[in-house]
Length: 138
Image 1: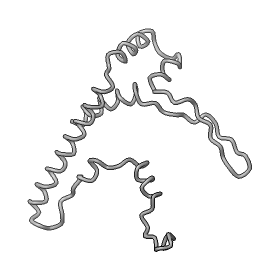
Image 2: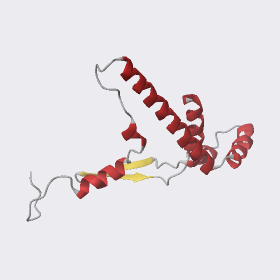
Image 3: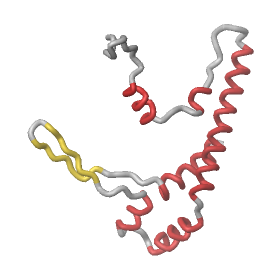
Image 4: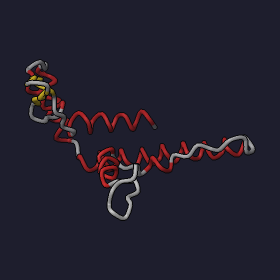
């Protein structure tokens, strides 16, 4: 199952997931300003590099045209869900075998885990209690 998941993830990441590459770091005073290239997929970078054989130059565009990004995404999510179900079921069975010596590990929270951006935004909203004057209590 993992091999199949990685197969679909590889296609999704290499053909459809753009990434920004660091072009330069410029120091001005005490600050470092980073300059990035335009976000492109590894597939686009490879085509632009000019390092492909003629055979690969023909094969890769055909492979790209044959892919469906929505279908890839659905397959990745389905396999991910099956993997978490498998892990949870194994943990529950092992927890029963141990007869109460410790808790079975649960991945329920990871299933719909918020992204780091969502956690960061939630943290900015403030999880610390405020007093009546609106000042955060330290």
